Image (cartoon, rainbow over all chains, first blue to last red; front, side, top):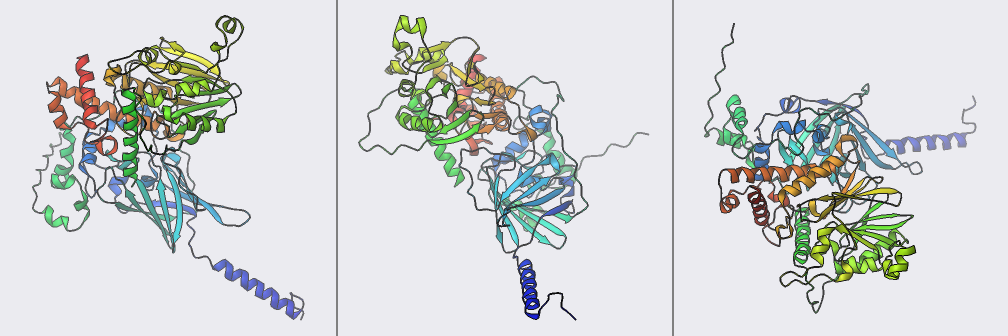
Length: 298
Length: 330
């Protein structure tokens, strides 16, 4: 029988070539995060979907300045035209709630990955993660919601460093993250799951780095809708009016500790509220009386 | 480290502001520190931004020549001209001053002399070549008034640095390099002579010191500044700018000091200034003295980002200026 490769030496060479190609194809050290990913909300569901309670600063390593920003924040701020279409920062955007798409950009000649791109359904936010070693821009360059990101591999983990972020929030109840913050994101793929661990470093409002994870599951059938956003007049206000609470006047701050039976002191956040041993301390704290529910009228 | 960099930037801004408020030529030190570099940042359309010469400088280039918004510190003129010539080999035709401070008008004399005004016919015939032998310097009238007047020990600035073409109306318009350029006067804001400049085709606004990114707004009460004017100026910028998707990009904003911005950055700053203004206004209504207002620290949530306890423009000076502005009105 004649070999499909013709002669024996030719067959040996062809097999060696195929083996070589196969081995080289199996050789890459890193995972590829490319693909469609659906969000999972098993943790932090109430914070991420309906949104956090006013005055809930639990588990946030914030300073006094951040607390006052939060206390002064009025949700009506989001009614202003200039805030309606504001995107999340790339350090928060993974929290969404958002579907996620990741694709890679490859140099045609070398087949090296130049960049990964992400698209989040919320606000249609797109981030570029440069993998070609380019430097970050100078400090006088523009800041954006997504910032400027570079990536490098640490074993099988894609580590993303982001600078040049616009101001944004750490929690959607007025706890701010400044435009001087940087973020380090670790992308870990395990089976059909993608874990995104975000570490925020903010010299303005955080006393310690703030670490938070979000999970996604592989969703190859996913199709994302566009996110058109048009700012409109929601409330008739004179130009230049900024809704906010003057210090000491925000009566909503007591609702969260009272409704959930959590000591007010704990709801004020701070680095120690991130750690398990704080639960022991909480047992010594006073809890506000729960509000009396009005009886339903027949 | 980033915070230290910002503090350093703030210190630099403060130092330039010191040189500003007292327009005085100090004797050169024996071993002068090396001058900082002037960096060029392309913005969009015809516009670039020069950083490092004092206040930010806006450069518009095109077939008609070069137009500058502000000229930086006098000591930086050579470096500014080198940067401008690297962007265009055309003649500098216009300089627009956003206000009177030396970190924005210091280079007027040297840089305008390197340019030429477009003039001819009867104008040159009647006045002579002096009509065209420097670039036109445009500013609001009070900028010329202050630069040409000796005040309590501070000499007037050199005549060659004075604006040559002033306006007193709410707006002044010129057309240059294929686009309309609007000069908009904001009364009693950072000073009493502020101009913001809108390049309509390039879609860029140059704000002067009504908007900065490295500190609280400097309110120069001695030169007619007022917090309400700063708020009005920020409101006007927000009203003029049109963002692209996600409320960013679109119209780009060159601040008086600090990094290149868009309207979302101005909105954060505007909200901060208005919130602090409202807090101090509320305390004034409740009869609080300046000392009581300072003790209450009405800026404490923004101090880690914009505040300063040393240098020319401390947080206390900002609060004091806001308080005095509002008291003067009430």
